[in-house]
Amino acid sequence: GHPEIVLGPDGERLRYNGASLYGPDGVRSGGYLKHHLLPFGEVMPFQRLIPALSKLELGQAEWQVGPAPAPIPLPVRGDTLRFAALICYEAILPDLARDAVNAGAGLLVNITNDGWFGDSAGPRQHAAMARLRAAECGVPMIRCANNGESFLADAQGRILAGLPLGARDVALATVRPGPAGTTYLRHGDRPVHRLLTLWTMVGLILALKDRRRG
Image (cartoon, rainbow, N blue to C red):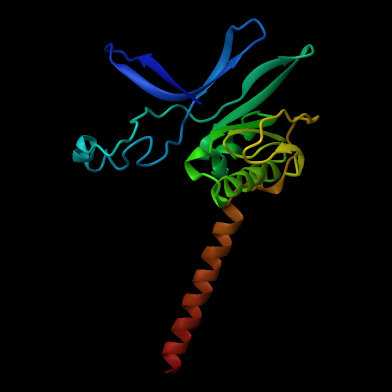
């Protein structure tokens, strides 16, 4: 990601955390502005509910919220590949990836800087959670991480090629974009929500029966 400054309708400067796509000619052909900002790091949360929080300065960047991830077209060998970008920890949020793939993205790209975690379990956990998005949505993922784990994964989340934390190298692999039509892609978290609702209802019914018996 990179800082991106946009002039608002009143001439104010709006700052975003963004990703840009450049062609071989060096011309910018597309991009994405981060949608889900990191609380306390990129934005102070709950400002709409408590306006006074906007005056609290804890070192947060105060980026603006960009639109939800959407397919970005990329010409490839006479065809057009549509991919969606996920910046940093957006890759741990299932709904963002699912919505982007349902909108037509055949590939997920995650760019991140995991230097905050140092040489700990953090970068590895972040990479493992990102792989889940590929398996859930049935599309490949390319992950480029500064101070983290980079990889190319197939539509089942299997790593085809990767670089460990601290490596300076290039990873190459062939990925085949296109959604596989997974159950999660079609239904999302709804089945789990319904099961939890059913489980809660059964628990309440059993509790009421026990109380009546007592």
